[in-house]
Image (cartoon, rainbow, N blue to C red; front, side, top):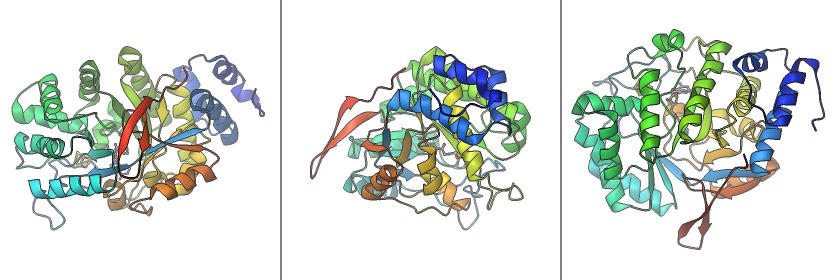
Length: 378
Ligand code: V47
Ligand code: SF4
């Protein structure tokens, strides 16, 4: 039973307590500024604790952005570079391998690989990023490529999505990250990332990945030009695919960071909006097991509070993050395991190290192994 009870939420509260699904209109109501944030948080926390108790998951991970040169010009992106700009880079095999060595030496279980679509890179170069890492560091899970990249690989190879995914799995791909989703509604997508893979393609890629046995994540980029109904539409599209395939593991709400982007005139979303988005996502996405409070993007303080507003995961130690730091994030570039665990405990939760596919990790002094799967209560 919940402590607070404003009349505006009475109907939704009854549904959440009974474990019933919320509708599009319920979502719009949750978006209303009249809904008190603490009560929204309390409802989301009810769902979060039902599924995960006090557990808060993290992993030991690193990022690799093999190039920042990109043919596209998404207005929200501070990471991309033109071909001839000084900040542009393009890694060779040795540089990629060096990142693999560093990851393994630091106990990483996961490498998150995404980047630009380089004008001159052939498909084989993208494939080699994965195969070189997998051949040399088979224990490292490679969570790589968004549907935007998979769509680009389809153009380069003139092959369908299924072929590209199968070929990447053959090279060592372990799962798909959640990026490239932005806002699915065409009223927004056509303004912020007109030319890259559209929502139909995004869903085709994740559906096909799930059919091939891959797990994946999903995201939503909020706090720019979108309206509340675009966000609820976005969440419901994700929920619909999850009903079909069950392949999403984690949803990550991504707060827009305006610095150095084409939308620099827009103010960064407040911490209050971040908490509201997390709570609404937890309530709407009843069939996605995990909600991630990505500390790099939220800041450590907001990520801690988010662990009581629906989130059960805080991402990982992270190293070499560029997308948010190029766009003005002031968070550290890395957190030690001790610090991550301290941050989680301080928020009143119990830290649990997981691998990418949500198995508990057991460590000895110099090795680790994936133990039993983590199962969310329905
Ligand atoms: O698709 C780009 C977003 C995404 C900005 O799967 C921006 O575990 C805010 O998807 N301000 C990439 N957001 C990051 C991503 C992600 C992050 C952490 C974990 C996982 C996971 C996935 O970042 C892009 C885009 O939506 N983005 N630029 C910006 N200026
Ligand atoms: Fe390129 Fe991705 Fe940036 Fe868009 S978000 S410009 S596709 S790197």
